[in-house]
Amino acid sequence: MPTDLPVELLEHVANRFRVLGDATRLSIIRILLDEGELNVGEIVERLDTSQANISKHLRVLHDAGIVARRPDGTAAYFSVADPSLMPVCAIVCDRLRDQVAAEARTFAV
Image (cartoon, rainbow, N blue to C red; front, side, top):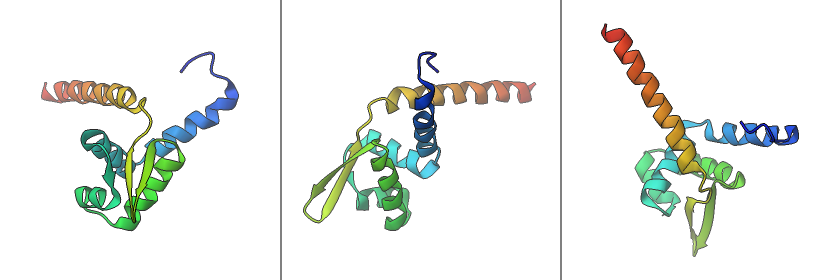
């Protein structure tokens, strides 16, 4: 964490991690990063869950500024609005892969 980050911003940082700390929201982000802009129905189909559940999570992601919403008639299309997600996800996923590989080596002996 940057040492020059004002203490007053730590609550905002913690909130961002809380928003990202949900598997359904991470799944939505992954789908949007992989496929680009999608509407709610398309996300529901890919995640095989309810429209109400996806809409709730999209609202949280939108309120946090992580996804953008584009209305189009009676539909709304969502896309990732925060470009910092790709490197953050890559860092976390790479580290987890390393940890899992190390644990597998430990148990293989």
